[in-house]
Length: 169
Image (tube, rainbow, N blue to C red):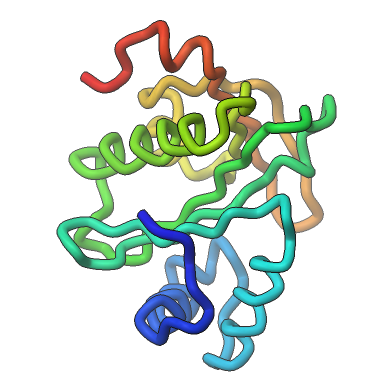
């Protein structure tokens, strides 16, 4: 994993390609031209609440992550981190990969900021695969969220739970 770099053509090309993928666009609705996606990334980089990451597997850029903390109905705690993930490369989809990258991201989020007590996500309720992946990786279902554009579930992982339970096996 590394922070998405808007000046790195490999990062922006990967982001652009994924946002224009039909499957990804159906969930994110960000289809567009490369220049629009570079501006999108720059805007995300300017938000101190967001840490946009490019996930890699064996040297191949395979996904993108940003946060959802502003949408927590009970209010975000000071160091909550959100998890909003897309896997844009089909070869890295499925349970064989998802448990590894999902747990790795969650673990990284807790290690990157020692004051983070909760990691939250908001997958589309109809996306049974990512909801199952979230739960299998140690998150719990907190509540439902109703956005104008989708019905989601709020998932949550607690620092204490991650480090007390053996979720890496």
